[in-house]
Structure formats: structure tokens, C-alpha cells
Image (cartoon, rainbow over all chains, first blue to last red):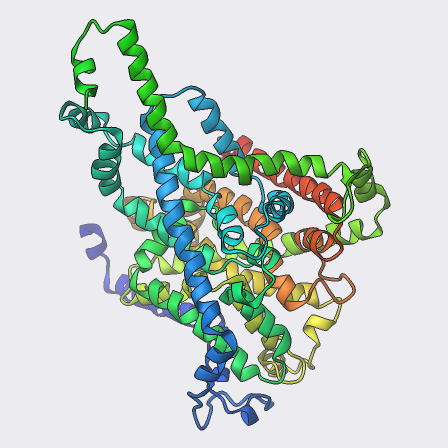
Length: 285
Length: 309
């Protein structure tokens, strides 16, 4: 820093100028990034008579808070509940299965361990489009079409990446910790539950956050496997509404806003985990 | 509970060793069992099953009929839609890719400055990250509306007449590409920011004392240091554009007008779940898989060579 300080006053001026230019550019581009959100929220708050005005009336008057209960009515609480069940089951199920599987690959010895691990690795780059059709047929044959298990289990099963991730993470935990616990009479379940899981909290949080995000936003599989309204998730209902509600754009935008609010709230609280999780997984989206 | 005693006795007999191995296998079964069962049923088996289906003609209701390589032949040589879908997919990826790399890189450089409130800017820029493809599409569909859409109002400021973005076969792809870029930008900013934060600050300070300007610092320090990340982002974005277009297209255009926005993933979905041609759709899915595999292998092969420092 000393060298920087020794610059002339002119250097500091140009530094200020560069800072101002950075802010200017960031603000300009941010306008375009946030404009869709602004359009969504302001439209969601408009009375029907102001939705289709052109040029656009950006500030609604009066502000129609009542659009939100009306939109929630269209979304249905059932869809909200379905999204929560779907996301929760996948996050906890995958969290449990991938960490246990990762532990087995990292610390237990069994036949075909390396061959199996390679098989897991090999499937990681296979697009969902490849397994989607046969998986749909399997689910239909099991009689699971339009059921929660048909909706959830095939996605819960997609834990190859998580298993790989936790295997790598567990390998980095010194084996002496487990050895010492074995001397004290601990079995693998104790070691997994009392040593490995508590040491993996950051990785678990990051993985949980990206899994939750992708489950909450998932569209293609629920679209294929559900038929009755009782099983529809929020994403499905939004897609459906956007095709139907040409005459009630304010309610559609209110509905999208309602779906975004929980996930945006979680994002704002735990932004660090989102960013870490997404940077870690790399292949999300 | 008897595990420690077998470990403690150095001259364990063969039977004791075998029982210890057995116990290990039982533990492994407990730990890996559920995971492996789901993996076999919903990942490994479908991969093989899907390849099998691709050699049949099958509408699910009737019995499948073996057609050999007929579905592949149909895709490559007979289906008039193939060239359209492939051309659309290439157009979509190639047009979206440069901006999806350059814009996030530029923004990451700006967001990497040590300035007050820069964290607030980062948070705001990352917001589309949590927005699903469906929510994005539901909003953008109306941004592109002909009569009262904000995009038409915006271009009106520059004297450009209103356009029917999603119903004009020349404009529908640019409209989708713009949406994809908006959706993808935050993720790529995160990748680039992580890479930029790995560049040692002393390099910049040294360059500055030597009188290097902003562009020179970027060109001769930042760019060489982050090429591996750039390459990674390039491949990952390509694959994600190729595979991730479905949600947006199904909500905004359904592949229309007249297949002008029908891309690979949408065509597979429609062939399977609207036309119920499971065999043909599976064959297309396997072609798509080979394309993605190609990109992944290129990444692996070039990754090692394209590291400059």
C-alpha cells in the first residue's frame, strides 16, 4: 500500500474518476438487470384498468394489495404445499443419501468400490433428456404416475454429483479422527453421524441450498409426471397461468411475485451460501 | 462393539479377518444401499433402457416394434424438421454465447473493484440467480408483448416501430436469446468474480507503478490469469444453453411460430410427450447426449493446454 500512497494528487483524482465511472456503468447495466423485476412488481400492484395502458404507467394508483390474495387463490395453497413437500423431500433425502453414499465410497471397503464410483462419475454428464423418457416409462409401469413418490423419487435419485462431492470432501478429513473413534468403540454410523457430518456443515449447507433452489424451480419432470391438479407444484401452476391469464396480467405478475418472494428472502438471508454453493457445483442450471 | 478387539490383536486368524470383511460389507450396504438402489433404478437402468428404446417404434399403448437404426436414419436423413431444429439450436447457442461470456466478465471486473457499497451492487446483480426459468419466461413473455409491452416502448424511444417479438419468425430467437442472457449473466459473474479474486493483487500494484493503464492491466494480467475459468465458463454455458432452453421455450413460444424457435430439447419433449413417439425421441436424446459428451471431452482435452501461467 505504501507505493500506492506515494502517488501524486493527480493519481488520486484519476482514481476517484475511475470509481465514479465504475458506479455509473454498474448503475446503468443494473437498470436493465432489474427492469424485469420492476415491471413484474409494479404490474402486480396495478388495478386492472391500468395494466394495459400504453405508454406504460409505471406507478400504480391506487396500489392494489388485494391482487396478492386473489393471485394466491389462483395459485392454490395446495400448489404451495406441493412445492414445499417436493423441495423438502429432495433436500433431506438427497442430503442423507449422498452423504451416506459419499462416506461409504470415502471410508468403507467393499468389493467393486472403485468400479461403482466410476459408474457414478460417468453418469454425471448425462443430460436429463436421456433418462427422462425411460424414467417416465418405469414410473408408469410402477403405477406411480401422478403420485408423490413418482414425482419425488426419480429426482431424489439424482444424487451422483452429491455423492461424488461428499466423497471428495470426506476424503479430505484426516483418517486419524475416525481411527481414534474406532479405538473408543465407535462404529461407522457413530463416526459418520458424530464426526463427519458435523465437520461438513459448510459443504452440507451449500449443497442443500443449490438442491433446494433447483427443486423449487424444477419444471420439466413435474410437467411430465403429474396430471391431476392435486400434485401440481408452484412452477407448474405459474406456467399454466401464463398461458391462460392474458386478461388478468396483474394477477399473473402477482402470482410470480408470490413464488419469488420465499426464495428471494432465503437468498437475501443466506446469500453467501447461495454464491458458494453455486460456485462449488459449477454445473447448476 | 467387538471391532476394537480384532484390531488390537495383531495375529488375527483368517476367520476373524473374514468376519471383519463381512462386517465392512454389511456397513457399506447400509450406507450405500439406498443411494445405490435409487441410482440403479432411476439413473443406470434408464441409460441402458433408453438406448434400447431408441431402436424401437413405440407409442407406449401398443407393443414396441423393432426398427433397428430406423429412428437414427429418420433423424439424420428423412425428417425435414431435423435441419430446422439443429439450425435453431446452433443459432441459439452461438448468438447467446459471446454476450453471455463478455458481459459477465466485464461486470465481474467492475464488481471486483474495492469500492464502498460494492457488495450491495453484487447482491442486486445476482438476483436473477434464484429466478426460475418458468418465472423468467412468464414475465418476459409480457415484456415482449406487442400492444403494451415495455420493450416496444423502450425501442420507441429510439424511433424504432413496435415489433411482434414472439410471433415474428425472425425476431422470436433474438427475443429468447436476450432472455437466456439475462437469466445466465449472474451465474457467470460469480464464476468470473471467483477467478478474479484469485489473481494476486501485488501483480496489479506492480503494473500500476510501471504506469500500466486499466486496459493494459486487464490484457496482460487479468486475461492470462483467468483463461482457464473463461474456458470452463464457455463450455458450461454452451451445455447449459443447449440443455436449459426447455422451460423458457415451453412457456413463451411452444417452439413457434411454425417451429421458428423449436430447439433440440423442446423437440425431444414434444416428440415424446405430445406425439408419443418414445423410440424416435430417445434416439434424438442419444444424439444430444453425444453432442454434450463431445463438448465435455473437448473441455478435458484442452483444459490442460490452455493454462497460461
